[in-house]
Every structure is written in C-alpha cells, then in structure tokens.
Amino acid sequence: MKSNLPDALRHSHEVPDDVRRALARVRERCGAISRRIHWLTTTGSTNDVAAHLAELGAEEGTTVVAESQTAGRGRHGRTWFSPPGAGLYVSVVLRPAGELARRNPAALLTLASGVAVAEAVRTVTGLPAEIKWPNDVVINRRKLAGILAEGASQGGTLQHVVLGLGVNLQATAYPAEIALRVTSIEAETSRPSDRALMLAEILAAVSERYADLRAGRFDAILSAWRRLAWALGAAFVEWDSPDGVIRGRAEDIDEHGALLVRVGGRIERVVAGEIRWM
Ligand code: BTN
Image (tube, rainbow, N blue to C red; front, top):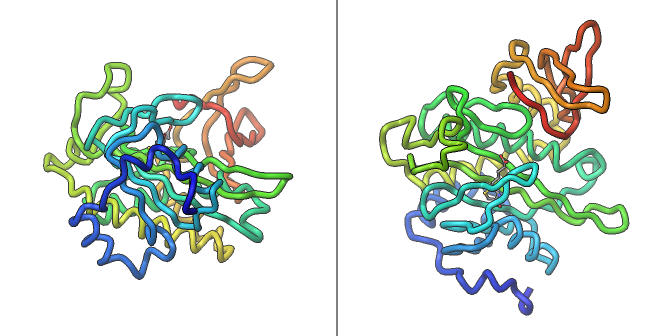
C-alpha cells in the first residue's frame, strides 16, 4: 500500500475537524469502516479510487470521501450529480467472506446499505426516509440517496466489493432532467444539514448492517428493509423483456434481494436490470 497510490490521492488532505469529532463519537459502532479515510477535495469517482486502492491491497473498511466528483456514477451508466459540498460522496472497500461471499454480496450489500442510510437519515433528521427497490432512499417519493455496490472477482473468487453512497445534502440547482425527482436533507428540513453528523451516522449504520450480513442475520436485514420499503404491495412496476413490456404489482423481496412481482396469477422474480415504477 505504499507505492503506486492512485493519482487522485494527490488531492487528499486531512479529515476536517468536525468530521473527525463526529466519527470519534461513533467509533465503537464503526468497526473497520472509516479506520482509514482518504479525504479528497475532488476526484472522478470515489468508487474508482476505492477500487484502485482495493486492488493495491487496501484493508477492509478503507473509506474514500470526496467533496466533489467530476465523473460520479450511478446505476445503469447514469451520471451522479456531484457538485462541491452539495452531497456526501463516499466509497468503502469491503471484503466479504464465507457464506456472504457465496451468496450475492453486491445485491445484499445494496439492500443492507439502503436500510442503513434510511435509518441514519431518520436518526439524524427525523425525516421519514424510505427505500425504493433496489437502491434508492426516498422521501415523499423523491430520491435522496443512491447506492452503487461494485464487486470484483478473480478466477471466480470475490476479491472485494466497493460500496458507493451518494446522499443529497444541499438544496442545490439540480439539472432540469432530475430536478423534479430528487430532494435533499436541506430541502426537506428547511435547515442546512450537518455533513459531519450525517456522514458519521451513515458509516456507523452501514457498519452495523454489514455486521448483520457477515453474521448471517439476513432475516434482520430483510425485515428492516420491508419495514422501510416504499409502496411494497401497492405500487406497479414494468420492465422490458424479449417478449415485450411486462407489468405487475411489486409485492415483496426474497432472501436474495430479488423483487417479487405479481403478474396476473404468477410471481415473477426480478433480479437486476431496469424496472420502471408506475
Ligand atoms: C444510483 O442511485 O444510481 C447510485 C448512485 C451512487 C452514487 C455514489 S456517490 C459516491 C460513489 N461514487 C460514485 O461514482 N458513485 C457512488
């Protein structure tokens, strides 16, 4: 880990004091997460920096935070709007092992982190954050946060998962094409959000939910997810299949994190790909 550090780390500096203090208060809940933090003024994508560090042998829990991203990525190749100070842009290197690595760790980590972020937002702000399958944290149907878990394997063996979290903090000028679908902590509370407190609570909650996963407590994650789920049992979804568009009612998730959709008299299992909520 001493040589060949990513170029992006040239923009790294000390973790700000307010963040350091907030993290010290949740230290015992954080496990390995945030023990080592790379704090960057700017970078392309924190997920890319974290993946690079993971390839160089970075320990589990290594955390990359950027104040802005120039190439922030969302799911399905979308851009994650990441201007300076407007959000939290965080990636954590995880090295799932055992049963968790044999299941679908990226999908399970996405579910577990959705629970963690929604719980952290509720704890810090009291806002009614909910989760929209598979990875959106929403408030009043508008997206507040997203999760991008990216795994890397070698010869069929999982090497690491980079867990990327983006949370909108400031009511900033979002691009027109997303402005009506997103929200921020500041827009919902009408107060500036406390970045340090939010980051610390999110990392602590992610660490606790990751501990649930590693200990095989999948049921605890699934029941928390169902409690926080937006519109499960009530909303309709559709997706494209080789036979045309399929529509149905989103009913539940299964133990692997797949969405279960009632289509006529049968249940369809949606694992990945893009669905449209109606
Ligand atoms: C999504 O909802 O589409 C996922 C968004 C994930 C955004 C975060 S911001 C930090 C990390 N770095 C990235 O480039 N993406 C993730």
